[in-house]
Length: 228
Figure 1 (cartoon, rainbow, N blue to C red):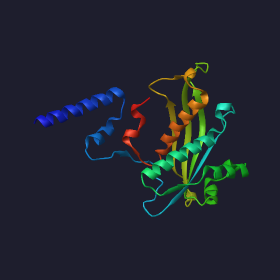
Figure 2 (figure 1 turned 180 degrees about the vertical axis):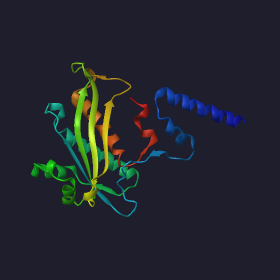
Figure 3 (figure 1 turned 90 degrees about the vertical axis):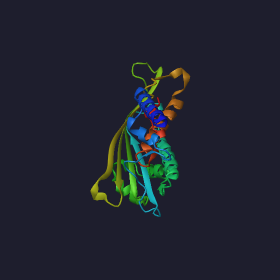
Figure 4 (figure 1 turned 30 degrees about the vertical axis):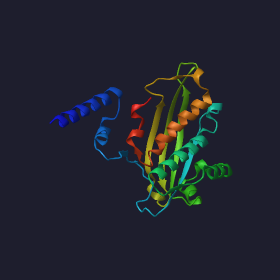
């Protein structure tokens, strides 16, 4: 009976702590079950159910943001960071997914200036890919509004759609609108403590990490529900 009361007290304390910090209360049962490695499933899993089959994927990122220095090549940088995050996730989850090198995709884009008007399936076929991840960066800001560029706080709005190259008539198999604010609960960061390139790198790495979770599962403890 004493053990039960201690366990009940622990559960109540965890629930109270979660509610107080804004953590996802639905994730708590995972932590309370011993011997489990709790994960959130990817809403658009790319790996095949056939463990021996390798899946090839193209990442296409684009933006029509104004050409201020802090936005130059932001689509390429985001592609590289997402590629790195996905490779780490696929390796960790033992998924046979191969990503086409970003350098090859960028060369293709340079050689085909009208690539954005082309069908994603056509580009995917060129690289002999199974899926194409399309990222459209609709908006991105690095400074807190009204701070006259004295405070950093990143915000982004990105449209995501994924097409199955082998089923072009079906349209996107996954579509979502991703928005983010970083840092969120901790508030903006003084621009005196970091330069714009350092903050941009931190922000885009956060964006890439959260985008990668759309395509490969991640540990509950890695979720950012309780930070910032």
